[in-house]
Length: 307
Length: 307
Image 1 (cartoon, each protein chain N blue to C red):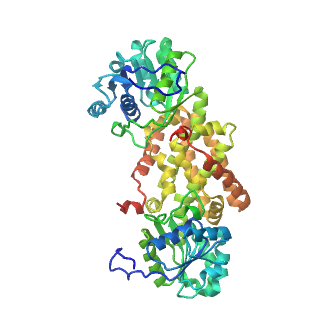
Image 2: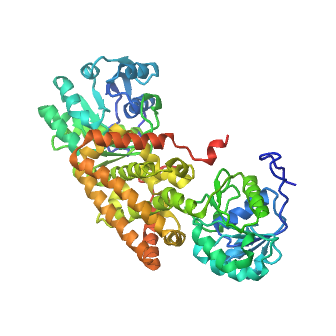
Image 3: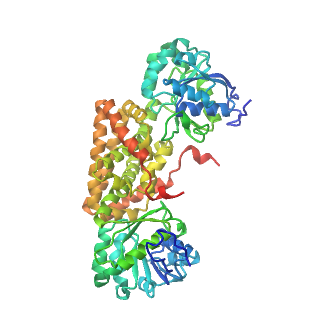
């Protein structure tokens, strides 16, 4: 029985789930299953992936206990379903399990965008929308696939829940307790606020890192130039190695916010360029000082509470 | 006596220097002095910093052995002088030591730009230009000051030497051997090639990271938004905490290359934006795939040779 020491008294202890139906056994889904098992919070994991070899590999690795031949059969009998598929696949996947969904089943996703996921859930789940708790754990790696699944991927991460007006409060409380039990800091906000904030601190930086790599590759002496890159470049472009399909989906799903943030960014860049062009040392130093001070003072939210 | 095992036979073993004159006792200069001492390659370090408290702190920390009250007195009697000052201060500093410079004295800098530094050295050193070996060790931290000096800062780093046509070959060979003895991989190239490549892989990424922070700060809910940023943002913006004065100087000194690279970058960004706006999923995925593959395959130059 897992011990709950988080916010004692504020909520009943979380009982282990009988069965997790894991739809999508990649990095995010696989890590969730491993974390849940490690915390003693699930008795059985039934998994499905679009690629049968992934499902098989997940079972061999002990990420899942049973392979299901379809999303529907992974959800059958589950009291918890985790959707860990590209956000663009949300609607079709939810439709495929819809007729098994009851108010006793809690469904969560792990998608990086929320307004589009909720729209997909409304269309697919209709009167069972109350079972769905939209979730975004802010964690990841620049490698995909179940072979990189890690029981500690979510430890210390922030998780944003963006409940709909129909989400059952019991599920919301359970979802919060679940992520807290995995070592996360949980916040609730509207899907719009989430998508706007994430466009700023995640989607835009990814777009810029991809553009940076594109820009270097487009030059005749790219190899020579890249051979001189040091630790600054390494860290700056790390997220430019992200999964192209996942990021295509995120950038398209959240296109309005991403494009708005890119406009903001280009304005800031053009202001700095104008100062460089004009040789305005004082203006440039003032701007860089503000930026540098803000970055030096910033600490990653959730992890500041860790030892 | 230090043991030289690098490229055996290719050059005579490096003899320890009698006296390092360290002009600028900050992170870069202080780390160089510590590394040289650790390698047994210097008998005495005489240091000068613009701020007397920095010089004093450097002596208390054992970074330097003797405090000098001026750059001139730090250089007096030195067979090796390291200039570790902001690049914009190069000309004035070299002028202040000029009448002590002889062909037996080797002078190096550690500046991030090379064409402007060489121009400053031509003006300041004139007939003693042969003593100067322009150097750029590609290493650093996002914190400044002697208190962060680290004997291992340069270990595994690349060092670019950009000798002038007047640089004495004996000094060039000695500079190469010295940096190799500190665990660096040494390359020689023209100052123009250096400045162009570094604009791409270092100066532009810094400018973009500063612009990213500017862009976030310019939004009404900056604190709330920043509280949601995760490890991707952390690494992407790390260099945005860089020293404002140092980066002001670099961006201004290398303004032509930096602005050219920024134009390249904005074109790449605008192409990606156009695909997002048009909902061109296939085009976007193709671009992201190229960028992601290039970044996944890239390894930092020098460190790939380490154990």
